[in-house]
Length: 321
Image 1: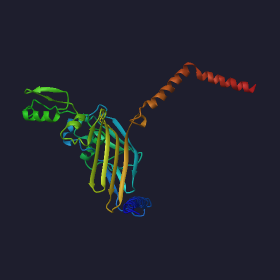
Image 2 (image 1 turned 180 degrees about the vertical axis):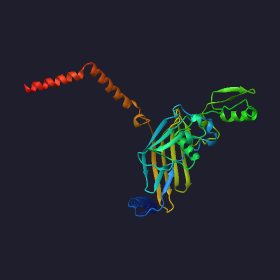
Image 3 (image 1 turned 90 degrees about the horizontal axis):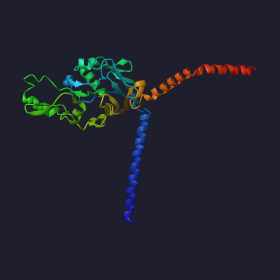
């Protein structure tokens, strides 16, 4: 046999044996985990981190959709949740499980307490309020589910400070995102009602690799690697018009303190009327209701029920005869 053929055959055998070894190793590891052949000593509890885009020191500048008002109630459902036995995913101090409802309850008009989201918004898991270790953490959790839709940077320009050229130059450089313009000291700058979507898309303070502003939605995507093999990935899709989160896809994988694997995959979907996902129109419920209602009205007008009763009675009499 020629040397070239021998080398080629030897190479093929090495590739095949390497693949087989990898498959056998993965299979053995999977069976080892499934059979619980080791005792897990450390649990991992991971909270769902909110996007870090909201500047907590400028909360009083934010504007919200008209639906985000007192007595407002928004609901999300844990659609899928797969995790290892030693991994717990939490919202506040509540551990989540498949089928849980996460509810954002708006207690009062945010405009009354803009800089205190822990007072105007409460988060519930099913019927129990989720508690957070401090007000700042609570506030950041709120913005995981609802983003502002505007930024109002129009301050009191009668003050000497706000009329200084330094401030106006800063203002124009950082908030020139809308079509609302005024002319001041021989230059035009923009003011008021800055779109939050434009802010995410064009602000020099936002990491645009994390945010994608589309026609109808805003998508936040982030991957956090704290250590080797400790990776957290999150993607949240927000409705641009309302600022509400539509879906959330979350996954995390960790090697815990004992060297054992812990991980989780979860998807969260927003619900609307009748407990349907936001992607399904409520007409799937309203159309049958309307058809049944119209049918009842027509049946009553045509006395269909009386005619049916007379028909059944006549049928009984005929059977007796």
